[in-house]
Image (cartoon, rainbow, N blue to C red; front, top):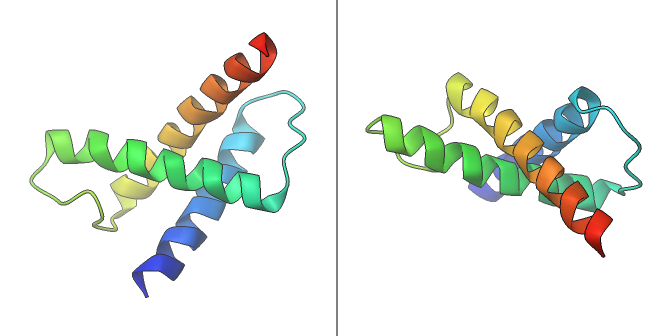
Length: 84
């Protein structure tokens, strides 16, 4: 059940990150999920640094940090893609 939750949260975080950050991203649904999952890990690690929770615990603040992490991952992806 944890893997399905991770994929759903990743999809939500990736979609919201793409909606919040302006610009044209030609990503498919799989790339959006990967973006969100990477953002979830980044956000989870940030949250784990400041609390006693595990990286994989699901909370509302974790969802918010997942979106923030996905935004950071999207901006990094754009910079790497622009240089290539």
